[in-house]
Image (tube, rainbow, N blue to C red; front, side):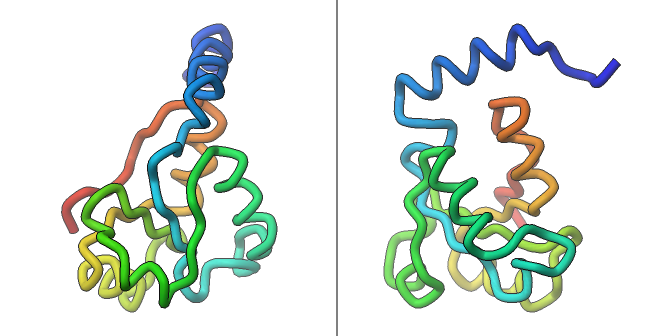
Length: 116
């Protein structure tokens, strides 16, 4: 009915939890203009990412890390032109808020845009 298996999701969740979370090893930043605009607040988005195991950094910190190595920018859905430019300029990967929620709900990484 909902397009996923709850049994598989629970299995994936337990497996990811043992390894530190679905987004363990990812460094994430929340793009400007996402929080609160048809999306949860900044604090809530950070909690979701942290609960999934991501390391959360500021926009300034994100620029100084090697974002090409598992750097994730959370954008609006659809992403704004400025958000797309930020992702391109930092060599990171883009995930919309809708995609993030879907990944967390299914405990499976789907829809991360590697090439923009």
